[in-house]
Length: 334
Image 1 (cartoon, one colour):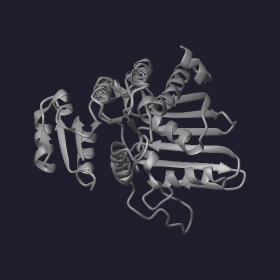
Image 2 (image 1 turned 90 degrees about the vertical axis):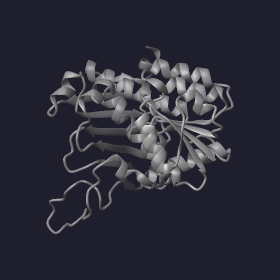
Image 3 (image 1 turned 180 degrees about the horizontal axis):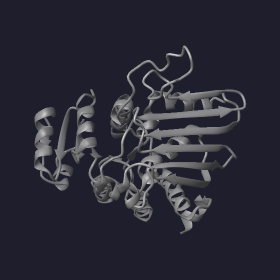
């Protein structure tokens, strides 16, 4: 099949590399406002370069991958749908929840699949955890712990446009908690601190946060995030039930050092970047998209899924600023 890529920044170029290695993909068509980025992709992957999204949609592509800036996501999703072309779009659907809801309304009733990029759904550990929960191996759940710690904060310009740590980073934890447990979040309470880069505080954001999520069956989920984890990129989950407990991410590249006498775990080189930690998951995610394009599977992460994670992020952001519990129903009706 022939896949179009809109946007060739860090993640777009990474997707181009991944797609070029998939057996199902015969050719790539790319476009980016920066000609040098498009030229580099053409030279590296043998991609065809076009000068606009409109030209890409008219280039006979079977599916499109939207990796452009967030502000462009709504228009590009809708353009793909109007052209009848399956869409993969990196999260978020839109910069604001109201825009995201408008996109959802606009595509409802259209017979064009849309997949939103939440790569943890394709990580082998999270897939196994979900299967264990669904099979009842843990019994009734009581506690979930989800962690995302970045090795260093992104640049000030990125922070200023990110929407805040809950919308930018924690939203991955929120999505994977929903996916693994099969439950919905009803209420949150969030706190945050700033003991690192001054520009994060100046942007009205926090560099380290904690959130308590209450799920609709009474399970408690604890989410921990930070922009500062000098040992590496740390993504983990614990799921505790009345019958058993399991963990995702406890492997030799875990960026954590044990001080227990005689313990050598973890013994590998720590993960230092999200692309390192989730290389296989990204490949599985885009392989899934080729199956969506081929019509052999439904979207594994819909706009509705992405918006549900977004509502949790909105509630946590409000909770942080107002120092109080916030229900999901409250932010939906705001």
